[in-house]
Image (tube, rainbow, N blue to C red; front, side, top):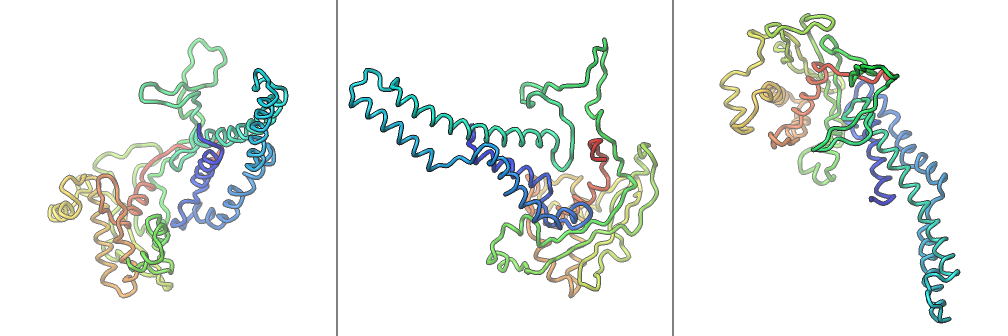
Length: 348
């Protein structure tokens, strides 16, 4: 079983993920609020919460632990010198062991608290969403997770896994998507020397994705027909612009396309396959094509030159090892505004 330090570290990592402290690059909505409070939240997680647990169980003093171990050894040696038939059963040795076990039990109880807290948050939070998973045991490759459901003795009980969640349809929900690409995880892990080598400035590089025009689609929970399906495309009249502050703005449209498909041109498909590999998935091509157009447009401006190195850094995936960092954010943006999702009812 992992020791107390490892379990504590695992809990801290989960809480940082839950409070979005691992995404300082995103700069809009909920993310912006969390970043303004990041230092306070970080302090609570790293210090206050752990201190509360340590105070409750008593912090395990490693020096005290070593002292008790040495005491056991001394009593054993003394029992042997006095000729005790079974030194381990000597009252003095048993008393010394009892004191040591008491200290160790305290450490075990503290570790259990970290483990239970981690399992609780893991159950209700997964990959950016708060979900309700009432399982007794984790799902494994050979066995599904047994769930607990509300039951009042009915002969037949029908239950939906998302019974205590709200369905949120995002088809007509649009908002600006802002981020500081210089704070991307791929850049934050670089040393200063590596940043200089890659031409990454120390100043923020904020980018805003904005919807200029969105055609009207189906309302409510009506599913769009294939020929009316809408897609994100660059706003051709002005794909990019800059605020007076020098921050980059990328303009999008969300509209239906002929045939209800978002296929790239044959020449573009050929160029993308040459750059990213012949096994490139067709579904990845539109966003990669958008990425290429944005980078090309930015490269032709004086203000945008400082953005180029960061945009072109690799943010690899299993299938696209040389995916540009900008493409990662375009994928996040388009997915955020086109996927429906469930949210726990207490967080609605």
